[in-house]
Image (cartoon, rainbow over all chains, first blue to last red; front, top):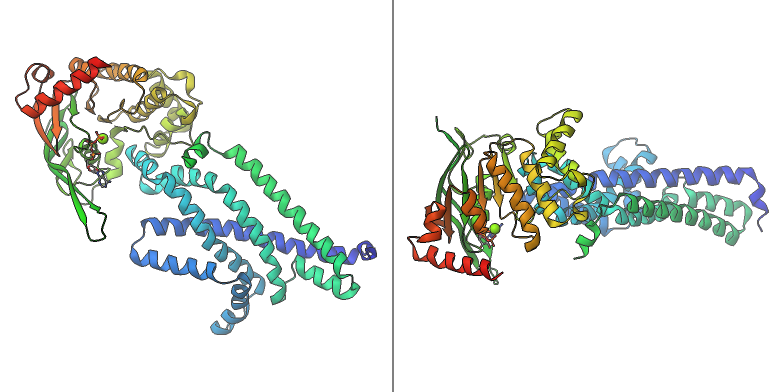
Length: 225
Length: 260
Ligand SMILES: Nc1ncnc2c1ncn2[C@@H]1O[C@H](COP(=O)(O)OP(=O)(O)OP(=O)(O)O)[C@@H](O)[C@H]1O
Ligand SMILES: [Mg+2]
């Protein structure tokens, strides 16, 4: 049943697949945070047109399954543009853009709980709106958002299995390949599942530690009241 | 040239608030034709009923709210003119909030330091030195490492004052600096303000701390329903205000203070 585990080739595949899964998730969460923050700022301070466009963006990325978005990005977009595009690059971008759709909601929510008073305080000492966002609002909002990040990380990690559908070699693809050769369906998925589990749980625990370290004394109480 | 540190000329500010029904729009005239001059070293005190627009007027003075009509001057410079760098102007105005509004992710020291670094662009060492000096001035050297939530209201508000004075602004605007505090904590904040007053700090204060007003204010301004009803020295208000409204309000306030 588990003899295949001794074959180093399979481990190379697993390692290769896991690397893509990890890289694309981390990249997606980071790009998503950056874009999500910009979208939040645009949504709060932008005009009606900007807000409308942002709403469409968010609805698009939250309103359809990620694997369809990957499919469109990898097959439809290059065809429409008549361009040869690197599938990996496109997939990485889709993860970031998709995550931004969700993270915009988290970041904006966090910003709104602190915006009124902290913006007035920042402006009152002579900082510009942008300086206040950068030095006051965003540092506080990010600390509040850490638990939502953990969720975002978990859901993105699990979504990486969609990459197998477009021929990119993630952890699920590794499992499919090994299963195709060994025919040990259940054992293979048990091992692959366990690797997902260890990685996701490990990072979640790490995020909890970071949250405890970084949280602003007293602020989480403020949020509940 | 004026010798005014700050001046307000016929300032108006209206808020439109949506009513219960979608089409109901209530117009609140929070500030109606208010003019005021403050010279160097002046201490003026605004008082009046809740909801009369005192905070709104003070926020307009600092251009934290933009007046609909009228002019605000900081020295010779009009802040209501087009193209003014309001951030630069605000850097010269200290503001203390009724609900304190410290930066919650920063310690007392960080709160005072931030503008010194970001606005005055002082080097790290010097910013730190000046922040500590400002905290010494409000007698808070023992909790410079504490976060806002770890301080008492009185301590937090003194940090708020330190944050406002650290840039050595031309004037400090204080919006009911003690009204959010428990009565036993107002004393320490009032003491701090008294020290500032004795150093000749120019201040415009919204407050109902009458004994303090009597002691330090050159002029008291009775404010009701968006405009100035009566102005005069404290002696006028404590003896015989000219208007009935001021008379009634003084009676109420003095009764309330003595009952406490
Ligand atoms: N941002 C705002 N939007 C809408 N209405 C506002 C806003 N700020 C103040 N108002 C209204 O303007 C009026 C004046 O409010 P303001 O806070 O200036 O009064 P105040 O004299 O400071 O009262 P208090 O003593 O309670 O602090 C009130 O009716 C208030 O509801
Ligand atoms: Mg007020």
